[in-house]
Length: 351
Ligand SMILES: *Cc1c(COP(=O)(O)O)cnc(C)c1O
Image 1: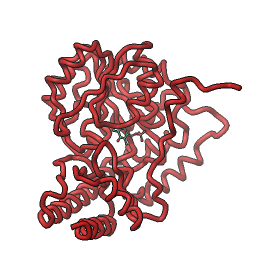
Image 2 (image 1 turned 60 degrees about the vertical axis):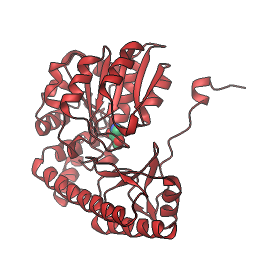
Image 3 (image 1 turned 90 degrees about the vertical axis):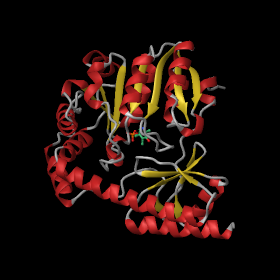
C-alpha cells in the first residue's frame, strides 16, 4: 500500500467559503465585471489564438502591457498563473532544503504552504497589535539566518500598510531575499515598484485578481532586477500562462483609463463600507475594532468573529474569518448595505 509522505499528509486543500447564492464579500475580488468593450476585444483576441500551439513562454505582449500600465521595464517583469504560482516557484527555487524563511503572522496562507513543500524551516514572527515592527523583524531574520522573508503590503488579512520608508529599511536591513507581495497596493500608495533596482534582494509580486478584476484569468506578476527575473523565468514551467489569459490580460492592461475608473469605483465602495462600519461601531462601542487599512476590504478585530461570520453566512452574506480577524470585501452598493444591515442586527441580537 503506497503511503503519502509526511509533508503531504500534513496538508489539506484550500477550501474557500461556500458562498453560492450569497452576497460574496469573502474573497477580496473586484465586484465589477469587465466592460462590454473589453469583452468584445477579448472575443476578437480569441479569433486570433492558434489553439493547437503552445502559448508564448515569455508572455511578451502581456508583460509589455503590464510594464506600460505600472511604468516599469518589461525585462524586469515575469508573468505567471496567478501570484500563487510565483509564490510556489519562489519557494522551490530560492530556498535550499532546511533553509529558513520568515512570515509576519497573520498573513496570506499560501506562504506557509510554499515553505512547507520546499522543506524549509519556518520562522513565524508575530505582529504585536497587528502592525509590523521593522526593527524586531530585521533582528529576528538575521539572528535566525533567514534566507527568504515574505509578507504582503498592504497586508491580507489586517489591511494595514507599511510606509515606503519602513519597507525600504526592512529590505536593506535583512540579509536574505525579500518577497514583497503588493497584491493590494493599487488601493494604497506605498509601492516600491519604481525602486526595485535600488535593492539587490527584492522581488515584488502583483496580481490581476484584485483591483484589476480578473481573478478568473489567474494572472500574477513578479518584478525584480534582471538576474532575479531570469532565475524566475528558468524556474517556472515554460508555458505557465495560457494563451487566453495572455490575450485578455493584455487587452485589459492596455486600458489605463478604464482601470483607473474601476479603481475609483472600488475606492468609493470602500469608503461606504468603512463609513458604515464606523457608524455601527459608534452605536455599539467596544464590540469591534475597525483596523485603519488601505485595501479593498475591512478588517475587524472582535470577540466572537468566527460566530459572526457563520451567522452572516446563514443569512446569505459571505465574509471570511481568518488570522483572528473578520475580513469583509467591499462590494457593490447594495451588497455593502446587505452586509451592514445584517451585521448591525447580529450585534443588536447579541447585546
Ligand atoms: C489575493 C492575493 C494574492 C493573489 O493571488 P493570485 O494567485 O494572483 O490570485 C496574492 N497575495 C495576497 C496577499 C492576496 O491576498
